[in-house]
Image (cartoon, helix red, strand yellow):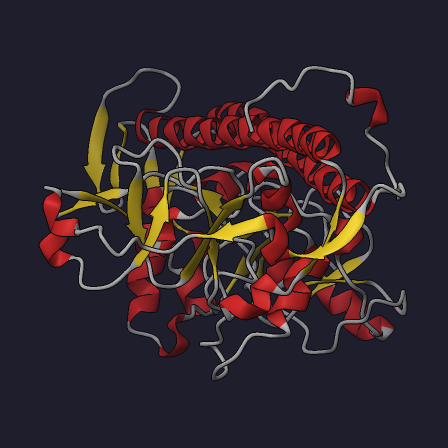
Length: 420
């Protein structure tokens, strides 16, 4: 940290916006309103606004165009929500009462520097510890925010730090958009392939919807060994036995086995619950009920009790990869949601899985469909991992730049690329 940096309270370098006494909302036909759901946790600007008649705005927080909107209530605050109000049709707007609007002070602080400083993990933790109220409804007091100590570099360094962080954040936004488009592409392909197949043949209506004429609808239990419930034991971060796959380890297109914990497990139990290549596990309870994972390559692993394992019989003409992709289609989810709707805790069990209806075609066509969708998953996985790397880079840069351990001196002679 350079000697030119100084530690000051936030109130010295930021302005906290309040509504002017002379302003009357009724002088306007419509007011831009920002609810909490339009304040993101992974972008700079708000996700739009709602135009409201002043007569229906009974409460809210006044803010100006360009203000940082910082949520003050749990869990929005802990989740990293905050955004800058941009592109409003008026010089001001009204937001949810659960935000604190603030902005930079001219010639003292840079808005984006303040924005990124307020995203730091230790800053959020410090402020969270000063929140008041009942559990689950705690709020940050504006006075606590004003006294927050800030390690402040000179203005040119603030702007250089903000440019670096914004550049990384913009890359992440591009990757998120690419990931969203690739997921939409996969969903469209799945819908088409499981409805029309790959051979352009006529279709027919069945109990699970429209499928190609030559396909049939089969009961999953006739093509699989009896599904198994998982192992009830405790997870451990220490390598005390095999890996222990849990519901929380099921990602959208892959599992990060390096983050999966271990468990103590005797040889007999390990043999009974050991996962093999081409096994499919399905979440049977909780918010993820119905979510599936195909085991491809994995270390020695067993699966937890809130998962069900499916193992396709080798002599049956059902490809596990093809089945796995069907378990992501709308026709599958309609069956799961219908079955779990009337069940305690909204879960599923072995009979539900055995009675699932699956569209079946020739093995060659199953292989073709699976190959197409594996290509989508490969692209999705690559984008997810690239995004994860940039997220880690952003967190590291945020800490190193804001503490002064990483210098931005080489950037100081460059003209700022953005008007901050």
